[in-house]
Structure formats: C-alpha cells, structure tokens
Image (cartoon, rainbow, N blue to C red; front, side):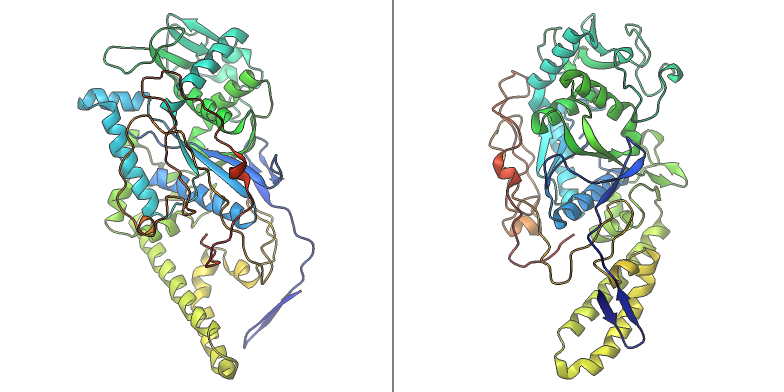
Length: 482
C-alpha cells in the first residue's frame, strides 16, 4: 500500500501484483497483453519519411508518438531496437526532381537534413537506426524474384505486380474487401494489371528516372516492397511492433503483410500493429495534396519545440488532433504551468526536516497550480500513484517508489558505410555534448555498404547483433527523460 498525504487529504492506494502492459492491436481490433517474441527485447519499425519536401506537423505527430512509446518501453525495462526507414526513391521524389530540374540525391540530402534537425528540436531521440531504401536494393530484387517464382507476382512488360488474389489474407489489417476495390482508389490504375488492387513491386525505367539493373530490366522498386526488405533483413521474418499513421493502413501496411507472409511463409509478419490518429485542420485531415498543411518550420516560428511536442501528446495517440493557433496557445500555457509546478515541487523536495511545516504550505500551492493542467490531460491520477495500473493502451503498473527506471539499451552501431553522401547536421546541444541523435553514445546514421546504383554488394549481415540486445545501461544522472 502507498500513502500520499498533504495538509488537506490523505490518499491510500492498495497495490497488487504488477498488471501486464496492454497495447491496442489494429490487426485484432482489441487490447492485448504485450508479450514480445524474444523476452524483454522489442523490435520496432515505424514508417519514415520520403525526403522530397518540408516536414509537416502530421509527420511530427507520428514521430513524437512513437518516440514516446519507445521511451516508455525502455523505461519499463524493455530493450527496444527502433528502426525507421528513409524512402529515398519514390514517385513523389522523382516528380519533384523532374519539376525542379534538381538531382534526386540533392533533394534527399536537403530534406533529410531538415528532418533530422527537426527531430532534434522536438527532442525525438529514440531511433536506433535509419535504414535507406536504396541500400537494400539486392534484398528488394531477391524478394521480388521469389514472389514471382512462387506465383504471387507477375511480370508485365518490365513492370512487376503483386497479384492480391493469390494471398488469402488480403484485407485482414484494414478490413478492405476485394470486391469493393475501385480502380484508382489509392492504388495506381494500369491496364497491364490483372486486378485493380494489384500493386507494383518493380517499375520499369522511364526517361530521366534513376534506375537499377534487375532480372526484369532497368527500373526501381515500388514503395511497399522497400519496407518489407528492410525489416526482414533487420529483424527476420517476424517482429514485435509496426507503427505508423492511420492513413498508411491501406494499401501500404496491407501490402507489407501480403509481401512478407508470402515471401517467408511465416505468420504473423508483425505481432502488434499500432496506428496513430491523424492531424486535422478545421475538421479535415492534413494533407499536402489538399494544401492545408502546416510545416514544422512554420510552426517553430511561433512556438518552441517543447510546446509543439506537448501539444502533440495532449490527446490519446490513436485519436485525431485538430491543429489550431488557439490550441497551440493553450498547450503553451498548460506546459508552462507544469514547468512552474515542477520547479516549485523540486524546491520543496530540497527542504530539510526543520522546514517541513512551511514546506507543506508550499506543496499545497504547487499542487494546486499543477492540478488544473494535469486534470485536463488525465495526468492527475498518475501523479498520485506511480504504482497504479491503467487498463489502456500502453497501460500497466508503474515502477515502484525508489526504483531506478532503466534507460535506453546499448544502441546499434552500423559499421556498413557507403551510399550517397550523408547530410551534414546542424549543431545541437546534444551533439555539443558529444552525444549522437539517440542520446546513448551510439551511431544511428551510418549507411550500409553499397552505392546508389544498386550493385547488390551491400549485405554484410543483419541489422541486429548481440550488442543490440545487451542489458539496459543506467545514465550517470539517473534521470528519466521520457
């Protein structure tokens, strides 16, 4: 039992055995006890950006969400290896290249540099490894070749398509029914397809486009196969968590399941699917195609990174958030109240025994200031008890009083370097201290061996090594930074 007493009230909380962590699984449409496939090790993948344009607030919501999830899992003692892909060859990037007259590698360098700097400003530090799609060309081609050999894919004049009628699990994630697919509904129309829902695994080269050699002629991969190649190489045929925005559920994540389970013959491809809610503007989804999006750079002209982060975690991660200046201003005020209260409580904690009586009054004042903001965000109950179990997404018993929360595990150091040039990063406070992007002293941004022409000489081994699953290390400060 834990007793928390103030001048005006006493709260006694009876604790029992630690409740299991529970996660809402999009695949099963229910909350499930979280049981990773390999003990306390958690392999997690989140769909990354296509670096062809400025990062917008919708992107920020997704990556703040999964940064928070990765940090919480590490706080609970799990050894999280978090991979995020970089889609550095894709239709939108090629369209931008053709419209601007700039080389596609220059565009990737510019917008990936911007992305990483924004991740620093938003204090997103949990990613262990950024995996570039063009570094996995040999894995992509091998997966397509085997899918063709197994009868799941077909060659149509140099383009290779996945035949969704051959996969009996199509639609199990999104709930899409084959007969309801309309030509052109989020999947490209092509007269060479056998079925409207078939999607491209390999696209033949068009004039002016970058291309790689393949058994089907020069071309480039489709969007969906890139992620499957990366995760199977990094994690094997199965892994624990796949995250992303709700809009990616169909067709992207649906296609990933179809590709991977047909290729490996192992089910399920992913044990837990987690999808974050959309960012809205005036009740409409924020999309570049609709022209109603806010770039993070624009938002940072008015609000600092911590305020943006606080705003984005104000709602449940599966719920949509309506972005507005008024909402941001309220988040700024609420965040400042929490900071003020934290500082007041910190001062109270430093008081000696002889000052306890005056400290009680200060504690009441600080708690009174913190309570309105905390109540508005469902934080007050958690503040009263760190041991209380919550039957909600990422719920579970909190560390007991006096426990040292574990911090991030020893991170992945990818020795495979090469590929096209890395963006230079603008200095940040973390890097000024000699830390890297994920704050644990280990590399997260080195490229695999190989080159941008897809020679196939880029597979010295899997992403995961024994070092990646070493026991968590404790920072000298003992600070919990989630």
